[in-house]
Image (cartoon, rainbow over all chains, first blue to last red; front, side, top):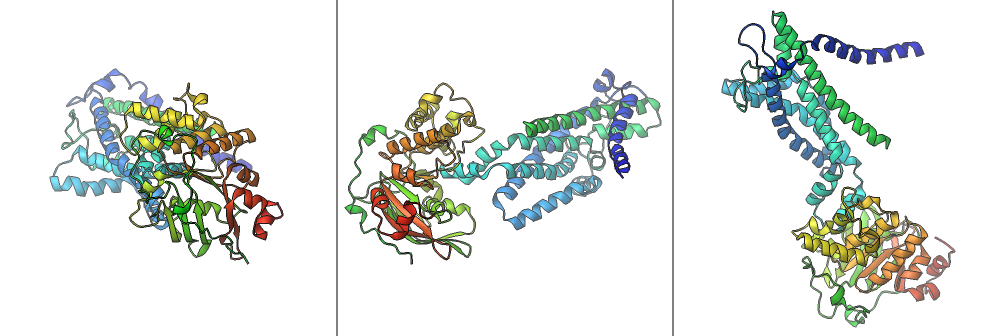
Length: 266
Length: 300
């Protein structure tokens, strides 16, 4: 029994190492300065993923700007103001939302923000990513707000500080590091999402800086399209971009988890 | 069985004006006070009259028909066994009980003649006049010592940095903490010892210039030395403020208070007022047998 359980546990750990190893071996040769700085060639080989990197670096901040205030405000509602019944409903909805296949979110935003304008656009991409980020931000923020001791709220209210100011300057301020952890995890998730972007921002081989009404490339979509191309050089670029994506997501995850681990230990 | 022996007879007008050793003008902050209730003529600021107070948590009655007059510029101790509604009573005095969704209050509480339970009274404004210090020190962990003290001002209006510095120093001096922290005002409030933290919380309450300070067992989480300092502080603060303290500790009540109110729990588990009067009378010459049993340590 013990051996079987140990084997199962190993199977849980091994894929992480295997995926990392696989991506590093295949991606390392392609992850070079060209990949980071050059735009894709119109035809054939050469070029790089600069378009995709720029795209991700624009769509994800916009998605965060949309999702973070809503996610935190919803968490404040659930943790500070609502009754237990409505809190349960909102929490349940957020939990289900986390588990919904992201492609469905993509289709939803496609019908909402792409079809009416007959134009794939980066704004729709950011909205789709934001919809995926909101429940993550909301749930982690809510957990943190519940950890803020009630005695601090009482101390603040007893000073004649209004409830809204107490929430902003005492409760949220006290939970700030934990809330940032949730935001970073949501950002990491958004970095890797492919399906919702295929329906919305589509991807593009043209540099798009600042025009959210037009298609925009992103790292995961770059990996997807280039890995399907019948040209080995483009497949190589896909591996390089995949490694870059892995590094970004792993860095965020490890940094955030290391910090919360240290906090738990100390 | 339990009777209210001493229904306070005095109308507030008959009460002696508070005798203060320190010129109150000199020690009052110059910061414009927040909007507050205007005292009726002849009523000293910080006088509280509780009449027929009943408090319910849902269907459970926590306090039964308490009437009590709290003298301004004096320390009133609320004593009694656990669960007799002492803290509940204290929390109704600045409407902190409203944070408990099921709590409901009947009766009247008048502060300087104004009914604080009236719907037009804003509890936020009320709490600037009736401050509170809690059982466990609860400084804001994200704020420095300085910012903790002036939090009540900084988070409710615009004040110049110089003004805040001045209020911080004055409040810390009054809370007998200035000399210990003057060189580390930027340090985190939670870096202080428990007793210092509690004095920081008192300074924080003083900074918004209240008339009344409610203290809910303010020394029960502290060691004897820190407790002594808090008690000394209360003796000084009494000259400028009305203080109501809930305490488990009868020696403490005897040491620090001018007036004592003894609560107990009835058979329905609701809190009753048994007896109230001058502290010396309650402890040396109680009128009620229950009081005598309690202060002599025979029950509770």
